Length: 381
Ligand SMILES: [Zn+2]
Image (tube, rainbow, N blue to C red):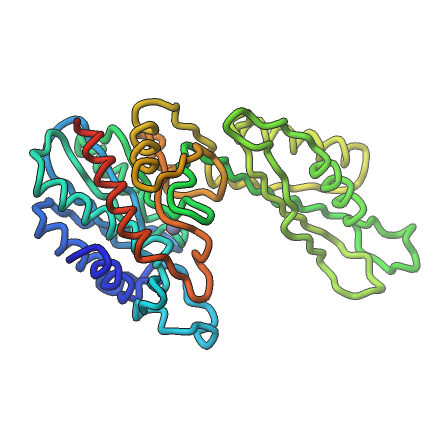
């Protein structure tokens, strides 16, 4: 299939996480036709759905470049708000509409077609692989992380990875992502003493203590950023208390916040900072504090060098822009690849990802294919 045809075929599978609706079968068939050796990995874990994954490779030995991606998509949301069927890949005004058009079925199609061109016209001296999960938008427990563990246990070695997530804010070729911030969430619970608001002397209001703690946390200046990263940032995302009545001091209160942090911090250093603020606030009081931490991604930075230069120069040559090397945005499966190989992200425009009427320009898909093809030519030259 050609790149637009393959994009549309992928979009027409209703692969809302964790359901794959034949999308991996379709991709496996397409890759097998090119000559790839395909393996499927079905993983299970407690309290999370089973997930199907595909690892396909062609060629032998080093250098080994892997394309990381996901075929799962987020739910469509309000179906009536769509101007077309989200799973029918509608073409309109030079664009293709459908769930996954931007994030990230078109990029998978672009890479597959780029490899097909490359293989047909060049002798491959090394390895090209695709690691495609159907669990990126969901819990990401049975996806990329486990496939990497499994293939490395079987002696695989990847040198470089390009993750095809939508990377550019408004024009193809504006950005190459060479790192990502870490994501750290903490939920603080403070227990006081419940009672009548008219008799505060017999109560201990946990919200007083919690808000002071949260205020100290959002007042933190964690750092001033680095050359590659913006300053680390805290956002409070939720505050709850145990009783909604307006004449009751609640027994307990909870506050949750998320920190997007750069390489000046680690999970350990953040825990230490938060613990110190909490213990300063509750010491010598009758408040009881508890805190749960979840560090879902560590920050990483791929050193600027040959690989990032190949991606940037390929993009610049095709688009005529000068791509900025950045670390902005949310987390992606690059957080798992970074433990095994150098990794950078380059894909389409993310503006309509996860939105109603998600779409990308057909020309951008064609251009992305040309960029990936140029990356392969430079990588193996
Ligand atoms: Zn994505």
